[in-house]
Length: 135
Image 1 (cartoon, rainbow, N blue to C red):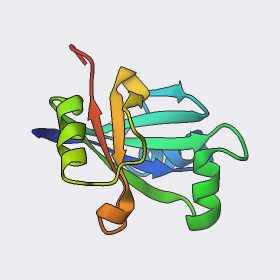
Image 2: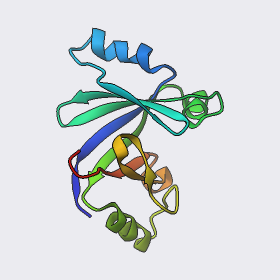
Image 3: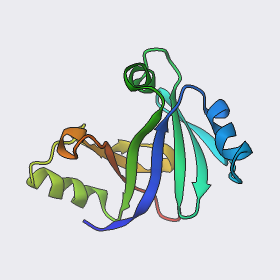
Image 4: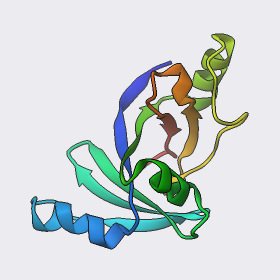
């Protein structure tokens, strides 16, 4: 598996626009886009070669709503861009590493994604992502 870069740091939030103010009013950063991803809405704040990804549920029973109810707003996951997601997933499965799903799915910006279960990483949820050509 080849890790290309830290693609983003996912941050669980209740309200993307409200949290974005921390980064746009206190720091010289800007929210560049928001995008629906299933029941989630994501917002991206570029920082060099990586992004802060603000992630909120669009429903009270959504994934991020449940996470926030249990742990509060804050860092949710680290996402690493890989050169070949299928090969990375096969490698992890061969090592017996627990994943959160059987197969990759589509995430924000058209990326294919897979998460390593936090019980394998000392409590850190790790996302592996592969972006489409030209991204």
